Image 1 (cartoon, rainbow, N blue to C red):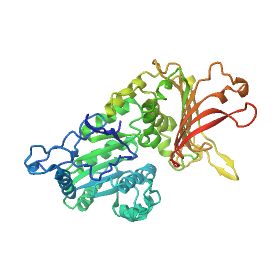
Image 2 (image 1 turned 180 degrees about the vertical axis):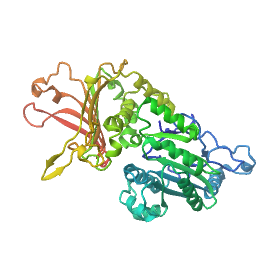
Image 3 (image 1 turned 30 degrees about the vertical axis):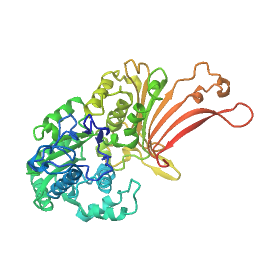
Image 4 (image 1 turned 90 degrees about the vertical axis):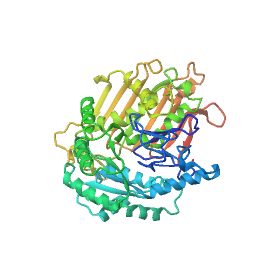
Length: 503
């Protein structure tokens, strides 16, 4: 699970998830809370906003709205002045500290397309501390300027305020630096540490390492970073990208090895797909709209489809992809996480652990997958529109005799009272006709449908369908049957649309 920022019971604020997409909620009032590792000795962190790691361990956080009752610093402060006093304290504390973010694997596809744009989005919305720097670390030889040129092509302004986007990009890029080194070299990480210290300029340093690398080198990087590049006076945390091992045994072994160098509350395991807007909206749609809850069961739903397709192949990433295939790369994490969110019962609260517990119940109730319920395939070369498209094994980074699947479809079943008998269909593939990611909920046929004749023998035309399109062009729409205007009784399907761009 992602880290959760949990309000107190008396608060009306919703719980907020920290994900690798970095969709961090920003309060209406600036400086509502700051991430800091240490505060003035006479100011105690309180529980108004408690940041929890993936297993519920509390981390350090500071709220403006408490923690000073009865302290010497609080005496003589009028209630009207208290908020301004706290802001002043936090601003001074922030001025004395810095956040150093190191993206390990900075030359990779995920870092360029997702992580750096997400960091810029945080900066654009003023969700990063005043003093922060971003370092890229990878084996590729690059200068600071070359890294900036690479990531500048992927930065976008993803929110409404666009008037100063170019200026913000330039300011962000000035804070981005690069260091080349081997992932298992303590010497190279010591060199990184020297560069970080130079940029931190003696301030209280909090360091975050984002591991955008294959899991087989997680431990080497964590060992070198913890021994040679940890913060000497602040916190050090590590974000671990999926996949977290190849199977249950390797995942457990990876956790055991990481804990040689880190405590559990320093480790954040992240599936960046959970930061997608429509994925975050899935639980809101279900649990805050009364009309959906009675329909969310085997009584009304015929099947649920989770579809992920890309219109391009490996394109030079074959070395990584061939070790995992489409099932481990997409289905076992992205799609399975969405399935668990979709099918879970109402959690006790929005705390990370409560949501995790309900998702685990879904996974434990799943029927073991059988071979006859799975189809796999691999894309071949073809010509289209006068252009030749290479096959999977034509990629120079893929072994010629590879049988790694690039397409898979599977039917999953959940053996519980709500979903017994309902097939959950997963489909994922590369080099398909179009790019899309969506959830399709197909409802059952209307019993004794009066308008059966108007649809002929194709009863699927009479089926209602709820579609959540994750990408591209995020949307939620419901397919309903409607009368075509005019004489006679002709029926047609219409969409009730919520297009995010238009909204």
